Length: 147
Image 1: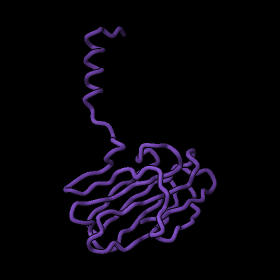
Image 2: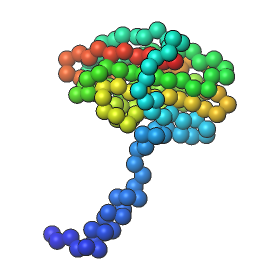
Image 3: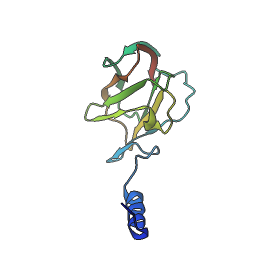
Image 4: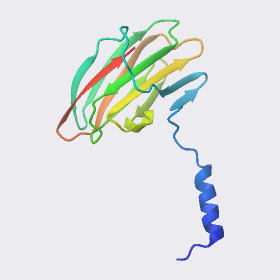
């Protein structure tokens, strides 16, 4: 099969029109956004760091209470071994976001760092986090922290 120059040009234009997943804004609706948090140096106000171990197909759950007036919440899931794949799903009191994988923050490095923010404040209440062992050879240790 021979591809003509016009067909190739149409294909290239079509590919460029397809929206890609932006590492700058992973999820955005009604003033709410989840964006990459970048390299983190955890502040003294971080919740206690949770250390866990997960296997393929296993799910671990965590939660934190978000108080009224809180404008942002940062999540850091760090397992440090890119060949294994973990996902993070965020369940706010009024919506579910994700699952997010290693590339969702723009870097494949065995770490998912995201920040949820909303104009006027995040939904107060208990936020839950689902850590899932999507592809894990043996078992994989990890740290999870929110702040």
